[in-house]
Image (cartoon, rainbow, N blue to C red):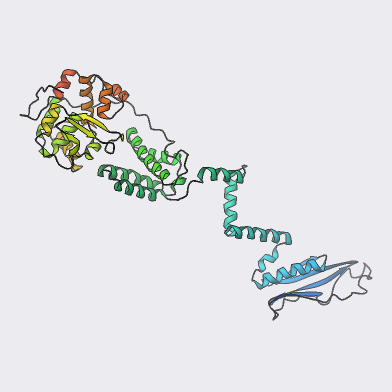
Length: 443
């Protein structure tokens, strides 16, 4: 006997039509005769919309069972229940699924379907599709290992609850550069900041919250630069992460990924300085627009980046001081540098208005000038020369540290006893008259 295909009925609601006739004589059949017999017609038919599912009574010996039958993709499906109530309940579910085009769900057993419906309801409550929600859970379960996901989520909320905004590394870099530009940072600083951080953003383009110390370290090592340059770039990346912390892109009260990295130990190297004769050749051969950069660097020891931010209003020839304000200094602290007699002789004839160094191209011009004279130009040679000659005269690492904006320990370790007092007086005797080295008192 073949079960009928569920027929399409006109009503749209769910209903049950029963024909629970009293069966007689079936239970009296001997076991050697027909053991299992199905009623000729449905004992009940459950309908939902145009879908209907018949229920058949099956008698086996003294037992009565109830079966539902339906079709999926041309294949007959069948389930058997002990009571007609259970069969009707399942038939109604099947009819609804057939009506909704969800016949594939009827392959599930009742307890499996209940679990599916419960999981779907939970996902709907969370506003998540069921499959992505399960994928996310399984990924979290894999990462957590044997740890409790609830405990880990609690710790995450504790540490990252202050993060109220999300941003990628390129977005934070753009915001930082714009902020520094708005705050009036010098062009040299902005160029260096943007150059380093754009390279970092290209290597780590994802959310800044996800960047790890290991990723920053791997990027720095991949650059294959000197230890000093690597440390300088790490400082720049630290600026980025400190800014991100201020903007609530990173959790408050926690060390940033950049701050957890230590600087590379830089081996001691010989400090390159000019002799008085070498620098006298350079400064006396220089055009007038290069004199401020050369003279202030050599006789006041101000860093190149600080000079680039310096205005002539900070140079007081009457009081014989140069004031480097906190916003101009590398160390963000104000300092005052005395103007020596020979430095005053170079600055006095100049037209002192606006920026001391109007163009960053002047740094390339002075190195080209030295090269044309056959004089090598070591790194930071003018600042190194000033510190070396100054300590030879004043004999105080503390005083030179205050003037140079450095630590006494660095001054003492790197610059002490590099030259003699006699040679130092020659250095501070390089005046602007006649192109000769003159011994000028009052240094």
